[in-house]
Image 1: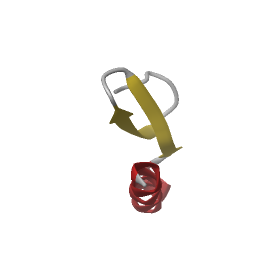
Image 2 (image 1 turned 180 degrees about the horizontal axis):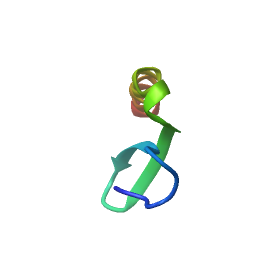
Image 3 (image 1 turned 180 degrees about the vertical axis):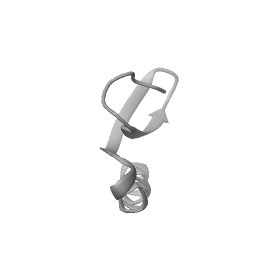
Image 4 (image 1 turned 90 degrees about the vertical axis):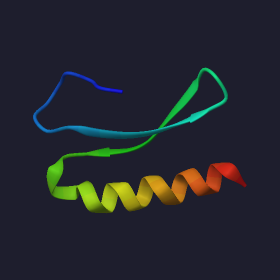
Length: 48
């Protein structure tokens, strides 16, 4: 998924089922690695 606003904005999402998309984290390039780790942890929490 892509949004056209801000410079270098990244969104981390997960799909559950056919239509539900949950935004797990967001940030810019400076926080990218931490944002990815947070999104992965939150996605695992949603699976429980």
